[in-house]
Image 1 (tube, rainbow, N blue to C red):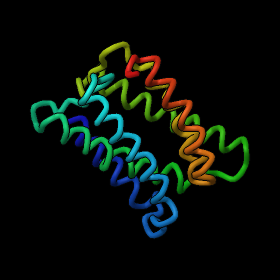
Image 2: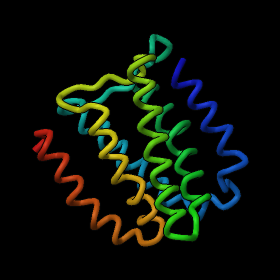
Image 3: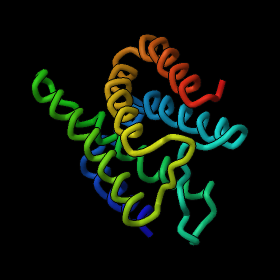
Length: 166
């Protein structure tokens, strides 16, 4: 139920705050995130998970993953990109706000609603560190996808090595 509530919030908030009419501007960055997330899901199913979404008995894990990706994260990222401020100070506050939102929503979901299960050394602090990288990378991808793709390689290698995928 937690994921459904967050999905409804994310979609509802994205209607007035996300620039759906300009989706073509944001689509490559949304796709960048979605492909990365789906790549993790594939690798995790082949090797092992670091985290798993819990369907709470309402739906299977894969449906919980799709709800999280397409109904929660994608609309939220659209808001994040659509409302990106102009001044450096406002940008720092904006990025920090989204890092905290994602981390707190995940923490509450895991701790109080069993919506996410951590495994193989992953925990909320790793999620926080991931969010710390993810939000600036999303903006970088929006501005310069080539730079973001290039910078994604060492980040990805770090996680693959640290968590013994390779």
